[in-house]
Length: 530
Image (cartoon, one colour):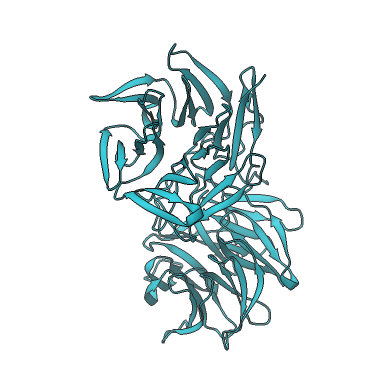
């Protein structure tokens, strides 16, 4: 049975009287698109690291079927390969695993000791896997559990690979910006091509030429394996991840979830549109521009304008994986992620690390006087941050996630694991709002605190003066699908980890509320009616 590619919540969102809702960005059909491979049935199978999901795209109908859903046995799939039997072998990047899924849906773990397991291919019944990390290995794996045979080690981030017509195994190296090959029987590797656009996958066309996606430049290159000569097949946006052929038709994937068909003469066709992977935190600039932290991307949507990319993981000066985000004016942001708090200015491609060495940072807020506060879910602490220094404000909290300042400078924290909102005092914390399920994003507008409760899938308004509360929206597309317990994404450098969803909330000067619909990959706007 065909299933929805992403959870889209209940059939409708219920709003309190006098409130209106619109989707600022359309729901995504995938949680990004990483490794792709043409299956025995002619469909394109898409691994989605962020969503712990594998989907199959039917090119004739455009339908997506969820093959392995979030909450299942497969966690953070990055690439797939098919055996002649129809078994699908899967690398699980963050957990360092290789699993196999049979055509009847059963799964079996092959190995769980391959940190950064990423590129995978099968040739003449032999299974090859590499680890996309600094010091990664390229190995032949025994599908029934014998010890791996290491062909190469100490590689600088190998990625999607394939055996060429000459019987040699071709692999890109992100860390050195080139493509290499080695005989699967062993021997010395040979450099095939260099000075590229950071290649992250290679496949071969019907004429025996390498076709490679370039994650940093967004180019799709055709490379002669005999002399390294290059031809640009298409120039797309940075963030390309992998590619596959369906007959002689070429398709490439992107971090954004887009699948693009590469046509002749540099032309392209969108086979599956892009969308947001999460999204995570959001903020609004003084001019009304909405900014969205989508992990490896920072996006902007001006009022009345189109959504566009301000920066991404491979952009100069990008501060790394972004969870928490707040605009501070003049095109500058304070961001959290990778255990660091940074000041980021996308226009000048500059970022300044304010504090590093913390753990799982989520929400960030800046007070009217410029004080910076961040929530560290990993340690259960909230910190104030100055350049080079983090001072603990409160500890012993159960999954602190969101932070916000009131007009008088009081710091509020959403304690997701305890189902409450607390205010930070000189001696600890006081409960402000309790009886919630799992609150995450919070924002203060005037005397009202707005809370996104992801397990209840509600937006709650709490009056800071009267202490009255009201549910403004129900059935929001936030958090996990009902009955699903997401498995943690442990993360691996340069990605923040463990990775997890975060339903952020922000408000503009006119009182419009923006919410991260992380379950469906959209941003929602709620406005009080006239």
